[in-house]
Length: 173
Image (cartoon, rainbow, N blue to C red; front, side):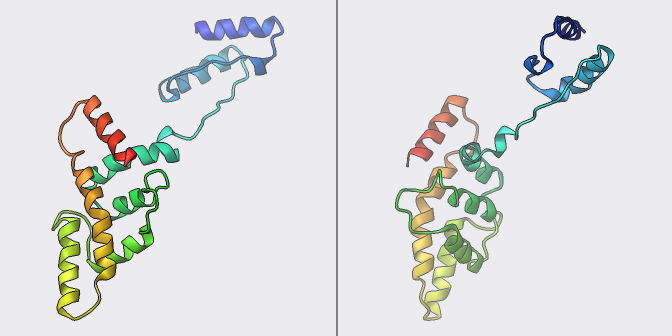
């Protein structure tokens, strides 16, 4: 109500409505109340809503390690992480599409049945036993092994400072 009264007073002093702004931390809680007050005080109102922060590419990249862990190291989440231009190691020569082909060949979905490393090792053994080339699988395995080791460090309870240090180390690699 008080905000409505103050804005109405500004408008009656001929302040341009386009120069008046009211900021809220979260419109979910205040939106309906704001609409009601503006209607009652005859205040023109429009909302400017930006995209949610979690949809920004940099934020998605920062959240990617947590997303992978929460998904039980799901294939799609691992691929999204590997596909991030923010997290790709310099000179990375293994594309997310290449990794996807290899993980599909290994029939890897998530770590419910086996780890990524075990799935790749099994696939490599099957290919070798059949006298087939396993160079692609070995390349992906070498690429993913250190990444998976780093991601496993995100498991378990940690303080915010510990998570921040893990994330910083992960991004710096």
